[in-house]
Length: 455
Image (cartoon, rainbow, N blue to C red; front, side, top):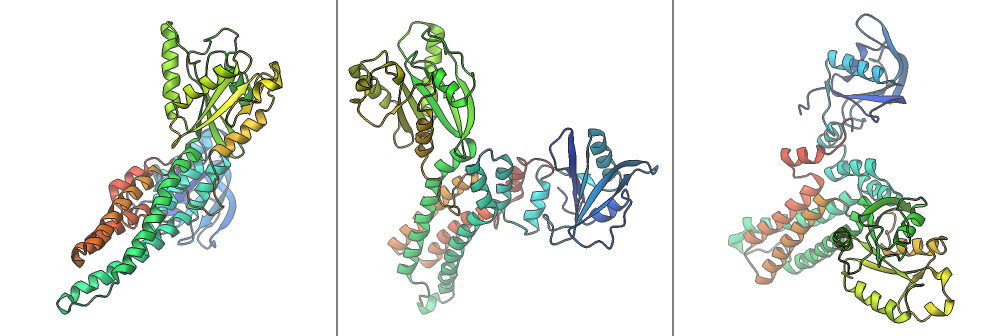
């Protein structure tokens, strides 16, 4: 992507709408728009909108528009930028874009406006990545995390860690200049304390990724249990629609049925699975195998038990059987006992553990189940808490943790300053990769290729 070109693109969603926004950025943005716009822009102050007409070479009016002017360096990209608000006709959008290209602009690539914002120092790499997360945020929780990162919360923490380590690296390398005089500028004990602080922060950020990942992509919740426990009825009750076929015939659900819903600001992905039992039916067996696979992938597992058809002994036995399928370090199991409206209350008072009692058919106590689900993912943290949601950041932080361990080992073994400095520089390199202080064309290409065009 040539940074000297003036680029243009449709920034609103493709298709027909009331209004469409077309944006340009680059050194010739104003002169290019001026060729097709009837109002004078040369003396316009920044951040001002002008009403006028877009015309073609034959002076035919294409549309009446609002043209907003943003002068460098106070624009999003740090370059001269223009936004054209036109009517949302597909014909009008295409005509204006064609006129802009004919006047000297070129069509922007994916994420090229955000890339220019990064290249021009308007934001760092983790902030630009947060833009894509903000655009795709489907829930309040995902929006909050993306906003915190876009406003520089994550970058600030990384930069503080990096600066502290860089100060020490400078002192260690200064010692190398005075090696013959046996002078020590960097207190090794103080460096060790600093490394431990950075290591603790890195570990905390790494631990937050599990929560961040489910916030960003939705919490996968598998609804499992024996046939006819009411799993499909529960799915329909949670979604408030007839998504799954409900029948009194055992084994009706043989494939995975999935849908999403926002509960208390968090997106949950509910997965209805085939009833788990021993069977000789080949198709049902495949469904049960898929149910086991979904249990392994789920962050939360709802184990639904039929109160009406089971006595206390069989319920306790079934609970222990399903507990063996759960990795309690990575997953949350919620035992839910169904059909409370069809049994005497004394029957379920003696059942062990923390259980949720519901009647899926009548939606009785579904609200309590929703509260339990919300609590199962833990505290989403304070408003300004940093939660890692980006796989690239997670992988770099893992490398950072490994390099920090090398620094600690080096301090313990009292290795020479030049070797210690190399290990510290490696840690600095990884921290710099997160914010883009250290980057490559290949890295930037991979990141911005996933952005939408026009952003």
